[in-house]
Length: 359
Image (cartoon, rainbow, N blue to C red; front, side):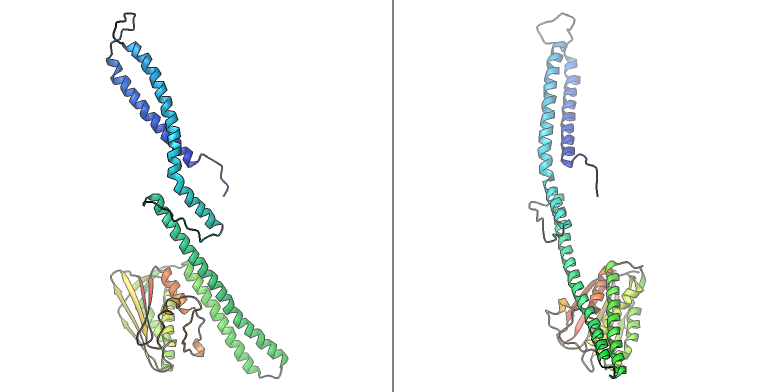
């Protein structure tokens, strides 16, 4: 943005310091004049005695006052310039760091030394912001690379199938159409998941009162067929847990958690428990499932986009696109909540979502 040049902050502070010094000096001189010289006898009509009179002292005092005011002006300007420079030096460091960040250098940190004051707090807050921005940009770059790779795969498969159909016209068309439909469905699911993830990241949604227990029951009813097919006991317990947010996004969050718990369970058997409760100012949703042991070093990466566990058992109709827990994490973050993943010693995972509660 182009702005007209004006006085710098250092010059403004210098003029303020000099003006304050001059004002203080003028007040002191006025006090001396009003409360001291007026008590000196006035012999200015030609009857000068041996003692000083008001006329003589006024002439001497006037010259001394002029010299003192000149000295205070010079001292105020010089001292104010130096003090203002020292005080604004941290601000210059922050400005330099902001310019570097504006040109794309997010790895630079101010790391201002000294005791805590307003400038140090501002510098620390700026360093924290740069660290979060660098992490977010890196995450978005990885996400874009993974998304382009994931989208390229179904498109490449579709092109291969079409080329094969052109070269072999006598090939079974039903099989070709079925494979094309499956690939196209996966691409559509991936695109919808990407759009949902982007929407939850922006936080552009209308907030309303939502009961997580009702969302859990709806998600369990939707996925009951998958649970019966895999022989998994699906149980929903707990009480009402009300929060404020997007009903659609929160339902997708619960559905993704329940589906994730089902498809990562044992091939046959096992159990998934969904529990909700409303604590003091917090609404809690907990999804726990049995299954294969999850390595502890793998747990922190499960919420990253397109990150999949080393052992996954899925059905074709629920193949997934690797964005389930990433969408959950994004929805929780958009609703100012927390997401906790803990590996069960006997196998499986315990996922706990805490959201701000409402009456």
